[in-house]
Image (cartoon, rainbow, N blue to C red; front, side):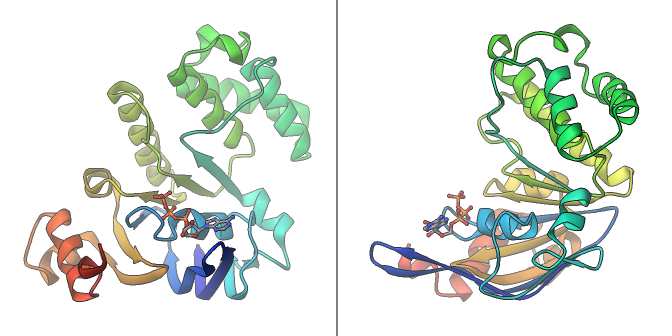
Length: 249
Ligand SMILES: Nc1ncnc2c1ncn2[C@@H]1O[C@H](COP(=O)(O)OP(=O)(O)OP(=O)(O)O)[C@@H](O)[C@H]1O
């Protein structure tokens, strides 16, 4: 379970203070895919970085299975896998070496890491390139290696920033299938996206974020009912119009 309560985060920009996350509250439950949907600069990545302990909120609370991301950052990190579609891995090491390295960083016993490597290699289909240097791998192979590294500690919560960005359709399909599998395994999954079709295909619950504010948050089928439409793009525009966002676009 991931819970945000009235979370605020500002940055100093050239033109003044940027309210990147402006009073955001929501919950994501195990066995559920929660999608943060919003345009460029809406505050999606900042929200995910706050959940993953990479940023501290100015105020408000972020809890992961009851652990506070500021006071109990280590406990939170043990339970979270943070993934993005442009994760850069060190080129000189192989996926196997990287998994051992990150296993060590997480203080996981080498025997357990070894068995996790076997599981992840089967799961992601990495047998052919497990011992190749990352610099020699294709984009899709690198993406799989990055996913494996982020999952080496078998996290209960998976946070995935723009999961299919920049991926070809085959790799994108693999990644979406993996995300669905996390849900089946009872993990708590939070993704960000600005692609409506990704949210429609994957998410059980959608939060629409505009200018740092979560202006809608409901189960996808409830949103379809509430807005009398089966098209998330139409719903997004209806919400943005209601919030006066289209006038500023
Ligand atoms: N480290 C930072 N320093 C200054 N401003 C930042 C920083 N990180 C984010 N911002 C600003 O905060 C706002 C929200 O950014 P964020 O990356 O969270 O948006 P996003 O919804 O993920 O956008 P995108 O879809 O373009 O990735 C933007 O105005 C951005 O410029």
